[in-house]
Amino acid sequence: MKSPRRYHITTFGCQMNKADSERMAGILENMGFECSDDPNNANLVLYNTCTIRDNAEQKVYSYLGRQAKRKHEQSDLTLVVAGCVAQQEGETLLRRVPELDLVMGPQHANRLRDLLEQVFDGNQVVATEPIHIVEDITKPRRDSRISAWVNVIYGCNERCTYCVVPNVRGKEQSRIPEAIRAEMEGLGQQGYQEITLLGQNIDAYGRDLPGVTESGRHRHTLTDLLYYVHDVPGIERIRFATSHPRYFTERLIRACNELPKVCEHFHIPFQSGDNDILKAMARGYTHQKYRRIIDKIREYMPDASISADAIVGFPGETEAQFENTLNLVEDIGFDQLNTAAYSPRPGTPAAQWEEQLSEEVKSDRLQRLNRLVSVKAAERSQRYLGRIEEVLVEDQNPKDTTQVMGRTRGNRLTFFTGDLRELKGQLVNVKITQTRAFSLTGESLRY
Ligand code: SAH
Ligand code: SF4
Ligand code: F3S
Image (tube, rainbow, N blue to C red; front, side, top):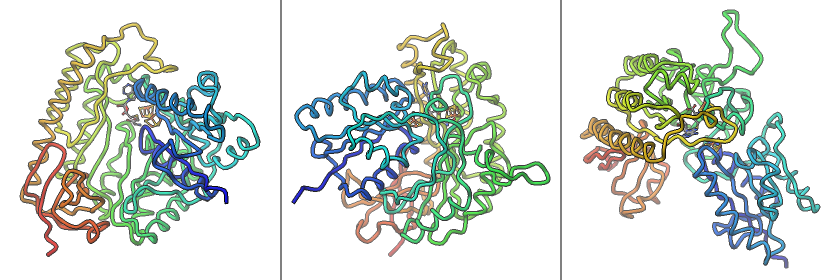
């Protein structure tokens, strides 16, 4: 008997890529492939790649080099590069790594079966042309049994001057509310408890769907979507990401406050605390507007947790402008902040500008910002001390197997003593006894 065909997927990058990988894994399993954690033991290796910063892209090339070598000894090995590097490089990637069988952009994830059939017919295939993303009929193979991602809008129509995402993810395409709800209902029936609705600029949801109300408002905004899906049976928690300050509305805050399943957590990247830098980034808001959004959130939901992304060392950023970013972090006090040194990306305007900063300046600013972030996050964590928080148990604490771990509604990682077999997928009330910058420890109140 022929041994089963095995696939391996390594995923780089953001949650959209993770969601795409899960859909592609579902397609491969439908085709009869079995999952292998070890790429060297698989006859189909797929790298789902990220190009947001140069180091993300370079990592892909080093992984790929090893598999390309292996292909010389194992001729039945199929090598696939999917995702954002695939989209950015296209044919060039084939020239760089001729051993590749398939190069496919993110919009083609749902077409994996068709594309592979062409490969198995003996073709080397590049699929990077923009397409209308077809609704997926295959069941994704989800990594978690508890928490799942649901795409609501693909692509991004913004043009932030540093960012490759619009080039690699294409134009915004919203899924219709009925398809989103149906997917969530399926997940609820399968026992999933938590859903994160995904979009690069999720506030743009619905703009491209037909139907405008008499007042001129789009009928299917993100806020409308939350009201439409909030009561899906079985789903206990709803999250969404990523919000853009330019389009963020008070109506959305009210919905989050009103709808019990929507978690008290907002992820709203600000990128810089300086108005001139924000302008050069083409972000379309000022730091004052950003602060007003946070004030408004805290007016309705004083305890909501706030996270964001920020970039240091954007071309031309002066020390004083960088300090405006520090000031914003100092004043707002984020629960979590993803920070990055600016990385010039091909095909983006800012990469062409002359006033690029040195790596030394960028890494010095990054370290200074990160230090402040930990101090502020530790302060924010302290508010949980002695409180009772609801934790959705996902896994064992890898560092202490007598403990389980999960997240609070505010998205803080929390550890407590317990048995995973009994607690996995349970919502447990936990009394917080210790706080750290980015995690908590507590005691279960279940017994
Ligand atoms: N759509 C989201 C973010 C998408 S990319 C938004 O608009 O905020 C995720 C994060 O990567 C960004 O928030 C930004 O902080 C960072 N990033 C994007 N391009 C970058 C670059 N060229 N250099 C460094 N960081 C970058
Ligand atoms: Fe990139 Fe800006 Fe779109 Fe975010 S909103 S994905 S930073 S272009
Ligand atoms: Fe990376 Fe593409 Fe996401 S570039 S951050 S994987 S959209």
